[in-house]
Image (cartoon, rainbow, N blue to C red; front, side, top):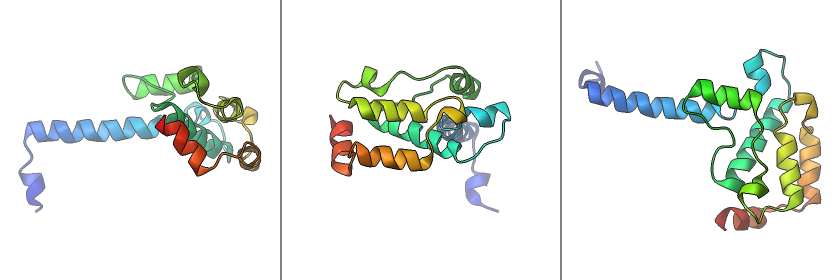
Length: 136
């Protein structure tokens, strides 16, 4: 028997449960609306998840928030986050437009992965540019 499990006390269980719930909330905050609605999905789910990641890197917080999983799910399905430029003034307009298009609730309204790649090349977002945006 693992001694760590034998030595679990109620306060330790609560701490571990809180940490596990926090991880679940973070992971669910990147899920796409179609997954919650039971709709079929394709590569557009990856574009949405990447859009969430970009939004987080630009703004410094999750685009969809809630007190718990049900609220986060509702926010993803029913709301659109504000444009990153409304939260951080230095976000270039083309980056703003790309990220918001990636976060479209309807999968059909999101760009393809190839279009995202082309857009990133067009607006010349390299590691140094992103690092400057995030650091400022």
